Each structure stands twice: as structure tokens, then as C-alpha cells.
Image: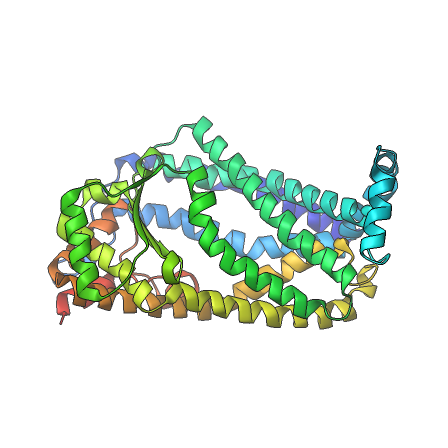
Length: 436
């Protein structure tokens, strides 16, 4: 009973927390604040008042999500709700589904194909369970999402979307995530039933194939669902890109422009892919707001990720850790499962607990993961300075980003260690000004 009350209080906290942030009045006053970083007498740069205000809200929002999300999932499990949901689906939903024409025929075919290790009832319960949990989390976090993703960004002038457009993207994003969840976790639980002893080996192989496949397909299949993508048509830009490509000796499969201005005023660019499937995406806001020298620095930075194979190495590390995690999960679930009412390793009622463990491990690993990421970004910065030969443009670009993205110029050590995937702007500016 106590755990159920704690679960109810946690859900209430998540739903009502946006009202707390909104009631501070910080967002409502954002339009009166200057977005320009402050230059001190000693030449150093200080975050703008507007960036400081945004940070005072975004940091606690981030910390809350980081801490409360795994607590919510563990309470769902330990309160008995996770097991009761599976039992309810089995008792109330499965009988009428069994009467659907063709169900028995599919059940016999599946049993024959899997040597009676898998039934249509298993498939249905797993699919329904994953869908209901996904919908439940969607509803619980919807106020949180609309505040942080729409209201707050509009208050600080970072969003150009209408509410209808934002809701459209939110809905499409959930459908994409649901599809990935249905495919990956659904396949995972079916695998547990089909290969009860060797499933970590097959699961690791499947995770590896998914990881590398996703990296290749994401810019082709998923990104176009949210953005218009066009090739680089500016001849002057094409020439500058080719010059840097030749100078660096790299092979980039494609450099495209994303119509980000339809959604945001922020500036960004990123690299994805590996080998011959490498791509660089430039936001159109970058091209609109930055002079050519600064754009060249950004493109060279993204090329640096290709040269150092950062995406490939990250994927290999993720696969290795994922494979290890599967063996750890087998050991852990065998010990904890019976106490939590799981009917063997393939019981989908363990899904909230599995998500909670993944969130907890991810949180504990954040300092290491972000430290590695900051190192990689530092390598890309060094490469950009060497290839572009434009340190003054690099420093100016980073200073401009502090204003355009309302980014903090610097951060306390603890915050940088936990949350920063890139070096603070102060460090990047200082490096550029001291180059070579």
C-alpha cells in the first residue's frame, strides 16, 4: 500500500511540476532580458542574462527527469502494478482476441514453426503490454513535455513552431519511438522465450545489427519525417567544402541542409554515419546567421568526427556495453524475477524494471560517457582549427552560439562532468584564441 501511494505521489509530481516552473515567473520575464553575452574587463565572456535565466529552469528540469524517471519505473514494478497489468491483459483482453477469425490458425502455425516455444498469446500480450506502458508514460509526461519542449522554448524565443506543428512532431515522435520499442523490446522478449539459455548471444547480435542499421537509416528514414532536407546548391559553399575536403583528405558521402528555421531559431550541425555512408547536416539557421568563415569552421569540425571515426567507435562501444548488459540482466533477472512475480525470463511484466535499470545505469555512466564525448569534441575542434586555418572565425562562432542558442559560456565542474557532452564554450573560445 505504501509503495502504491508513493507511485501515485510520483506521478502527481511529474504531472504538476511544470506548474511549479511556470509559477516562478522566470519564463514570463525572458523577453525583457538581453541575449548578448557580457564581455568583462579582462576580456573573458560571461553568459547573457537570458541564458542564465533559461539555465535556472532547464537545469532543475533536467535533474528532475534524470532522478524521477527511474524511481517511477521501479515503483511501477515494486508496487505490483507491472505484474497486475500483465495479468489484466491476460484475463480481460486475451479471451476476446482469441475469438478473432484466423487467431487459432496463426497460433498453430507459430507453434509449429517454433516447436511449441512460442504462441500467438505470447505475441499479443507482449505487444499490448509494451504499447500500454508507452502510452502511460506518454500521458504522465505530456505536461512536462509540452512545457519544456514548447512553452519554455517560446518564452525564450528559441522556437518558431505553432502549437499544432509541435503537437504533430510530438505525435510522430511518439509513433517512431513506439515502433522502435515494439521492434526492439518486443523482439527481445520473444527471443527470451525462444532461446531461454543462449538469448544473450543472439540478443547481442540483434542489438549490434540494430545499432549499425539505425545509424545508416536514421538520416534517410526518420529525419525527413520532421525536417525538409535539401542538397547544398550554393556554388561558393560547394567550392569551399571541396577545398576543405581535399585539404583534409576525407570522403563525405553527403552534405545536406536541414530546414530547421521552420521549428527553431537555434543553430546546429551534426555528423552521422560511418564509412561510405557518412553524412553532414547543416541547419539552415547556421547558413543564415553566420558568415562563410564561421560556417567553414563548423563543416571542418564535423569532418573531424569522420576522420577520427567517432560515430563508428561510439557504436562499437555501445554494442560491447549492450552485450555485457544482456549477460548482467540474465544474472539479475534470475535472482530478482521470482521475488517480483515474473513468470520466467521472458515475462514482459519485467519491462518497467528493465527500463528503470537502463535509466539508472545510464545515469551512473553519464560522467564517463560525457567525458569521452567532450574528448571527441575537443579532437574535432582541433581538426577544424588545423583544416580551416581560421582560429579567429572559430572564436567568433563560439561567441555567437552563446547568444543564438542561449548557451552558458561556462559551468561548474560538477555540472560539466555530469551533463556536458561538449566542452564549455569558454574552453573552446580560449583554445581558438590560443591556436596554434
